[in-house]
Length: 238
Ligand SMILES: Nc1nc2c(ncn2[C@@H]2O[C@H](COP(=O)(O)OP(=O)(O)OP(=O)(O)O)[C@@H](O)[C@H]2O)c(=O)[nH]1
Ligand SMILES: [Mg+2]
Image 1 (tube, protein in one colour):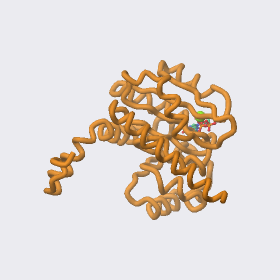
Image 2 (image 1 turned 60 degrees about the vertical axis):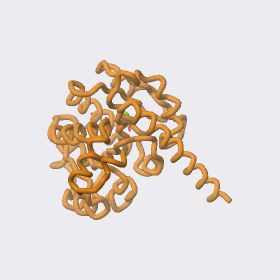
Image 3 (image 1 turned 135 degrees about the vertical axis):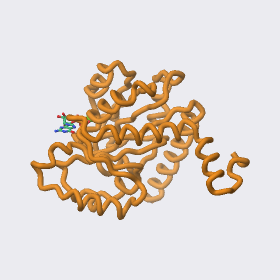
C-alpha cells in the first residue's frame, strides 16, 4: 500500500514538472537545477557563474533551503532577483513549489533561472522540477567514492562539476577514480574541474552552459540542425 502511494506522488510530480517546463519553454527561459551536498559550494558556484553569464543572459535565482534566507541574500547582494524557498524540513524541492514560486519572478525579463536545490546527494535527483538542465556538484573534501555510493545523482545529470579543485593537494582524492566511475554511469555528460573560489575552470563551464541555455531557448534550431545532419524530415514535423 505504501509503495503504491509513493508511486502516485512521483507521477504527480512528473506531471507538474512537465507543466512547469512547458511554461518556461513558452517564455524561452532555461531553468538550471543545481544539486549537491550541503556545503559543496552551490551558492558559491552560482554566484561565480552569474558574474560570467550576466552580460549575455538575464538571470534570476530560486534558493532552496530547509530554513533561513542567507543564500537568497547572498544572491540579491549581486543585484540579481532572488527568491528564497524554505521547505521547512523537506530534503528536496518538488515541481509544485516551483510552480507556486514562478509568479514571484520577473518572467518577462528572464533568460535563465538557477535553482539551488536542498543540500543533499540523494532525494533531489529523484524529483524533476521542470528544469532544462541539471548540474551535479561534488567538492573535493567530500571524497572520491560518491559516484559508487550515490549513483542516481551522477547518472541523471547533464554535467558533473568537481568544485573546490584548489583543495586537491590537501586531500586524498583520486580524480581518476571519479572520472572512471562517472564515465561508466553517464558516458555522454561532461565533467568540469573548477574552483568557485579562484575562478579556475569556470570559463569552460560557463561556455558549456551558454551553449546549453541557447539550445533550451531555441529548440527549433536543434531540430533543424538535426534534421539537416541526419537527412530526415524532423524539420517538417516540428
Ligand atoms: N576552497 C574553496 N572553498 C570553496 C569553494 N567553493 C565554495 N567554497 C567554500 O565552501 C563553503 C560552502 O560554500 P557554499 O557556497 O555556501 O555551499 P553550499 O553548497 O551553497 O551550501 P548549502 O547551501 O549550505 O548547502 C564556503 O565557506 C565557501 O567559501 C572552492 O571552490 N574552493
Ligand atoms: Mg547554498
